[in-house]
Length: 321
Image (cartoon, helix red, strand yellow):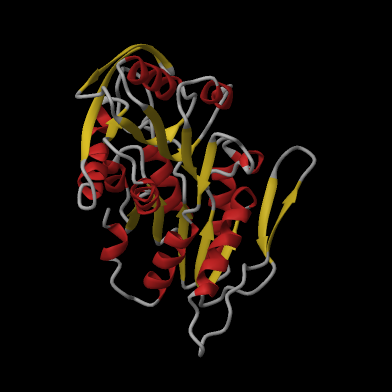
């Protein structure tokens, strides 16, 4: 087994290696991150190349494909390089699968970017894909190769339960998040009382929220908003402000992917949110000591599934939420 990382996700890959070594057996050799370099040409073109043999190896290549598009291209070139170097299998690990919001034709004459990205990964030579909290779960069906889809709830539910908040309520920031919120609420209800709130939003245009109303009992509740990503933070902050106005004692949030584009961080700091939890699927080293934004690591979850896939062990428990 060989594990490599492209440039944008090297810190995450190093955490995965640490997690793999933390559970290593006495008869196993310690894992290490493979040696892969990326050469850059003066015109901006780049070329990944492996500094060690991958012939006959099960090769895992890790890279989140957040913007710019270079991150996706670097992953595709790395997969192609591994296949041409006679790797036995190439498994692409995308903690964050970019272009996933373009999962359908919601208006005339637009691309379905998620399907195109899936085709590109397959055409490059990936034999399997691992990813986390796809923006739409049906994107798994865009692939003709196996997809292992894990959930951020694996790290968030223990965090929320561990706070032991009274009058806890899980909130969906929009109607599309109702299923996720219900899963969180059911899991947490095993240990404590937990209700559910659904926010209904009306968009003026992409990334611009017109209005939000909340459905459910809000007054006197400690509310946790759950979502798959935070991009501009417009929806999240507006939902938090509305919930606070309706009588919530406190409002917190968790979202797997912290895209945090534009002035999202500033919006969060100026909102009614007390705390926001994200994972490290997208790197944000500048938030290491942020007073409001907390980062939970998904590396142990990916390390677990990498080990299970390589050893042909059942991976069903990894998908439980």
